[in-house]
Image 1 (tube, rainbow, N blue to C red):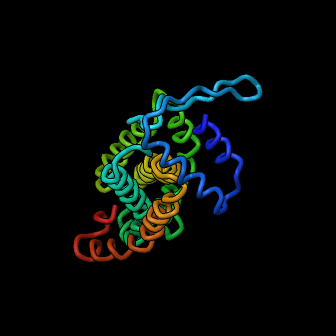
Image 2: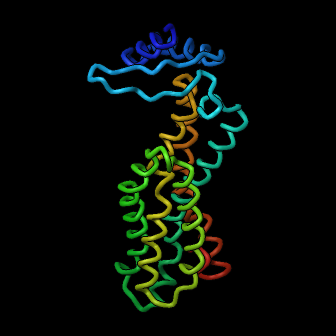
Image 3: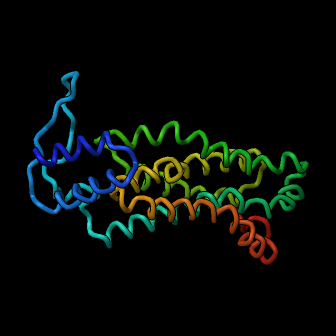
Length: 228
């Protein structure tokens, strides 16, 4: 009952020192094995919760090492996807010469990549909220496709295919952008969530900044395809 009251207070308390104290007390309660009694809302709906406060399936009960590794992977994934947008800019001149297109058309692979990771969140976050699917399949399947598509994108021999492949890359790379913050919230309590989100957002901001720097060396040394 005490745990239920804490959760009720946590849901209604403002983001203040009082709420942080409630969160800290709730985190302490999780270290004790206590069965969680299902609660009903005012309309009769049963609120789904974990079986016990120290349920191993609850990401907030994972070890610090596991949570750090998962967070690191998500940050790297986010960095790579955001880098993939800006990294193309160094290849525009090569695309203009190879496919005999104008500067406006040569910017389309960048625009369609961004469009792809703008449309992707319409699909992937809802899928990740379905219990039988969850977040891991979203990450694993789409990252695999994102990586595989990098090869034909770099080897493509016609401009239309380049546009399609760049769009698909952005589309399949979008889950980390759409559910990265939600995944951090799954793993960390309110006390530690701001630090995790800061790391994730930093990875997102560093990608577009570092991408052109990396591709500048690659394109100069190996040609325009190496930034794709």
